[in-house]
Length: 212
Image (cartoon, rainbow, N blue to C red):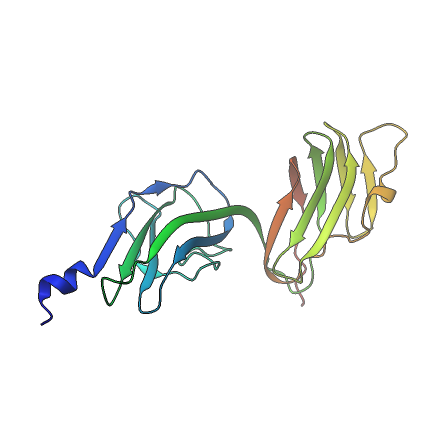
């Protein structure tokens, strides 16, 4: 005979303490993944919730292994966010022994460029490199188009006029066209989610084009 006590013992859960995410950005790319063993007839459910003010929490939502974290949007400001996760284990009999091995939360800050004009925006950009190496901007919302320089020098400042396709560097007697992938920045109307790789300080100057 099945009793209430036996049903309770076939279920279990673990809830984490709030985890503060030390990122302040226009938005983030996120992913949640975990390792588990789920014998036939058993189930492991992973849920998350988050707060942006340390007072009000979102509702618990089920997660998909390897997918984005619920309630984390690429184009929404990500400031002072804390997150919690909950593991729910369900089994139909005591012969089944599901196992939860570990969980990984991934966050990558992004820039959000909101082109409020009616035509593509071709900004001017200044890039001051920190450390030697490459620098790139990948527009994840538009075919992962990449704007990239290689072989930059620590402290070097690159200026790019994307409209006139002009490149200047602060280094004397140096030209950077050969170190550029020849894909100038062009931001379509609406929100552009930009992934930046390579340490650098960057500054944009732009104006929107409105059709009369």
